[in-house]
Image (cartoon, rainbow, N blue to C red; front, side, top):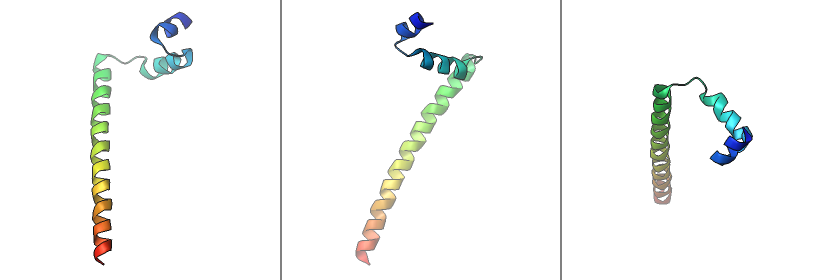
Length: 65
C-alpha cells in the first residue's frame, strides 16, 4: 500500500480516504459524479458573478440616495 501511495504521489491516508469514498462505484457512477462536479463548479461561478453584480448595484443605489 505504501509503494502504491508513493507511486500515485499521495499519502496512505489519502489513498484510504479515496478507497472508502469510491469503493463499489462503477464507471457510470463515476462519470455522473464528475458531471455533477462540473455542474457545481459552473453554478458556483454563476453565483459569484451575480453576487458581485448585486453588490455593485447596491453601491450605485446607495450613492444616488
